[in-house]
Image 1 (cartoon, helix red, strand yellow):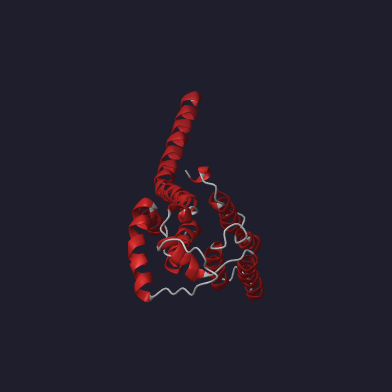
Image 2: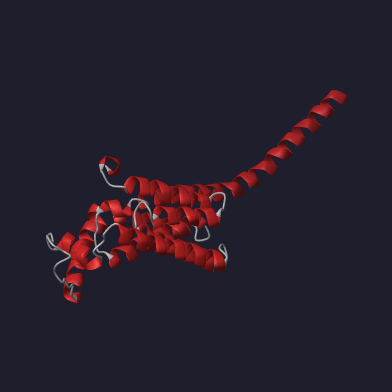
Length: 231
């Protein structure tokens, strides 16, 4: 469904997935973060995911402080430059235009979003986010992966992506599924990898316990054959 839309969501999901692969697979933390910065030029709201992922990498010592500052400044600078030169009217106009009807002349009128309007839209968009956007299902799968193996970087990244989506929703309460696109890839992959590792660990002790008995049986059989040949 996502690939049929005339929006950059599928491309943004592809770039974000490639960035997370660089971070989790070959552990190219800087280049993965740089690719997340590039994703801001595809969808400006990708700055939330980029910022949260880079901050976690900084806390874990995967990014140097100078690298974090440079990439964060580049991501924020990209966001504001794109907004400025694209003629963006700001968050308030987008909010009113998306949730309370079109604004025909946004540059000629003063718009205001009250706390009541914001909270009403947050509550209204929860159903679209949790059900239509399948966020509830993917959140359950993500925390299942974390429960199976908390030490797995894939499970931890799945939770980070979930948290980034929550922050993004609170900043702009639109529960449309296309804003959750990267979850459709990251969480299933994380769950499969974690479940596979868990199954492998559970089978390893059994296999290790069976191997010595087989070895002893083969050795005994060889001894019996040697004794028989000597007779």
